[in-house]
Image 1: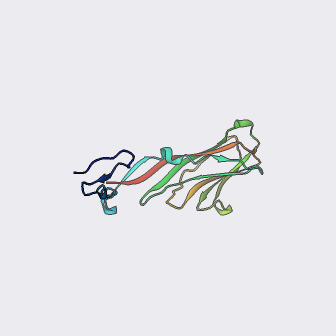
Image 2 (image 1 turned 90 degrees about the vertical axis):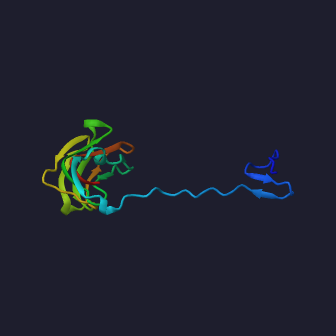
Length: 161
């Protein structure tokens, strides 16, 4: 007969024969099965919603900041209607923002420049984004320590079961 002894970690038992044995091992944790990718066949149109809110960007000591947002996942695409760029300092912020649509914020992907960094909206109608392409906002001349924001609105196509 095994008995519990004070000061011994739970799970270790002392048998009548005088030997120590551990508690039986626990079953390993397993991830529940996921549906196979072939099960996702139906495309639905939904608003971009929270996916279009980029992580807030802090202005560096040089007054620069950069934020981006874009689709992710197999079969997902965006048709953005507009992008809003603004900072925590509001309309009096001296920062200037430039908006790009592409894999990187390069000159050939520029869609708007010299926007008031404190608050501006850019129309993006007719643009379609696939995974790997993003809406980028790049600020310059901002106040170090301030926060910059990018919000993208529009429609998203996503696969569902």
